[in-house]
Structure formats: structure tokens, C-alpha cells
Length: 265
Image (cartoon, rainbow, N blue to C red; front, side, top):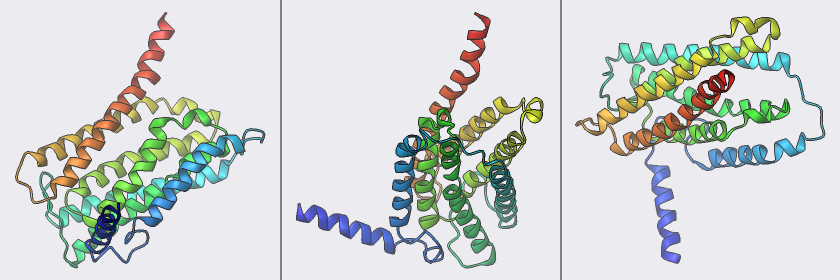
């Protein structure tokens, strides 16, 4: 048992010291401990939040939600722009791109936007907190919690070890999708008068599925070709994205196809 514990300690020390020296000093990067703490608090709130709100009136949060969603639209636009422009200026390959670990202007610019993308996933945990405060418990599905909770770990590892390279492709696509997702949420906050303009919710899910399909193809391609990007990361991304495809396909079926079938009966 002592040797196992020592092996775990040695691996933890190795994991800490073998990260990207450029990003290690940045907030929430050097050690996984803060992320594990955030993750743990998040799960506790998911478990206990509905009970704590059980006898309380739901919060409206009208202006808070409007500011929050508009801010995330702006952040998503910024990140998409940075991923796209930096990758083009640096001559990135959209098929196979190793990480640029240099401290060049473009190398650091890509690393910084990767950190912002990672930090945005921490901010987005507030989605769930707002659902709890508004007593929208039906929105807190397994898919919702799984997606939000795992993304912070995925991108901690991304920024800690591979801030750039193939990772930019995921961040760029996801930022693009989130522009429209948080725009939808911002418009929905404006009330019933906006409902007639929000007919495109279904297509948001299709856009998300298209994104996941593109990421799966991208990661899968790099697993079968000789690309100088860590296969371990490509394998993890591929396996993870398959789980999201399955979960989102089920969500799409249950929400749109099955509901339509029931209405016809």
C-alpha cells in the first residue's frame, strides 16, 4: 500500500512539473487541486441546491441573466476571433497541428485564448446555479451536469499541457456555437414577446451535433495519421466526444422527434 501511495505521489509531482512552463503561472493552471475543489462544490450544489430551494420562491434574475448571457456572447465572439485569426496568421494546419511551445507573439496569443476558453468553462458552471435559483430543476439533466463538469477538467489538461496545436480546433468550433447558444438564452430572457423569434432552438442542437461530429472526425483522423500531437490527448478527445454525440442524439430524439410523434398520435 505504501508503494502504491508513493507511486501516486511521484506521478502527481511529475504531472505538476511537466506542464507548459508558459501557462503554469496562470490562474487555475499549475495544480488540478483548485479545479477538483470547484468540481466538488459544483456537484454538492447540484445535489443539495434543489432541496435548499424547495420551500423558497424562485429568483427571477431577469437583469442578471441578461447581462450574463450577453457577456458570454461577447466572450465567445472574442475567443472565436482569436482562435481563427491566430491560427491563420500562424499558418496552422486544420488537419494536423503540433503545439507551438515557443514564447513567440503568436504562440503566446494562442496559449492565452486557450486559457480564456478554459476559464469560460468555469464561468459557465453558473448556468446550473441559475437553474437552481430559478427552480428550473428539469433543466439540470445528466447531460447538462456531465457536459459542464467534465469540460473544466478537459480544458485544465489542455491548457496545462497542450495550449495550442490541435486543441485550437475544438475551442474555435465551440466558441462559434456558443455565440448563438448564449444569444438564444439572452433573447429568451426578454420574455414572451420574443418567443416567436426563437423558433431556431432545435437548430442549435443540430449545430452542436455538427460540431461534435467535426471534432470526432478531426481527432480520429489524427489517430490514424502520423501527426506530432500527443495520441493520448487525441484518444481522450475522441472517446469523450463520442459520449457527447450519444447523449445529444438522445436529447434531440427525446425533445424533438419523440415529442412530434406523440403529437401526431
